[in-house]
Length: 117
Length: 111
Image (cartoon, rainbow over all chains, first blue to last red; front, side, top):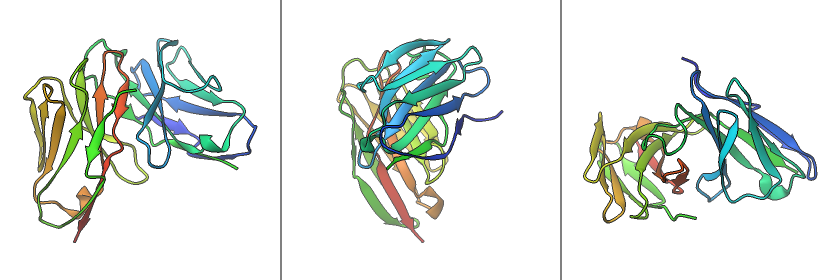
């Protein structure tokens, strides 16, 4: 069974540009969550999508957005990039939506490392 | 924003030593506590998910305990090996399936 796939693995963008990251979940998983990791910080929750609907959103500005397609693949978009957006972005997939079954395991991709210059 | 704290931040142990780390989390609105191992350039790998107070889980030389009433979990590694070198993350799960992560404990096992 293929794991969670994130593309691209590395990305360099200029301040002010926008970027789109992609996440393909494990087959059969309908929930995709996105996290940001910056140096010295734990993984920070961005948002969760389930069956093409955003169910939850973390405390990030509106420049961060996402969507999910009918095949459960998800994209995350960051507009008007800032230097502080440089981070590792991880996505995780789960079989069930959040809160349905406590302790549902989340499987992570390897992440996309975004550098904003 | 929920506060999940892990200690120590980093740890160096000799091969063969046993070690343990702590994860502290809020004692209210608890759904589950997750432990992950994250090796450099790889995906975080789930080790344990615990949902009940008093839960103890074991996988090989690694085990974990959970105390939801006081809000802490311990991860133990018995007889550390170089391949155990990684960052160990804990994550507190609330009802909305947000995982609130600690900043991790970076373990280095010296051969």
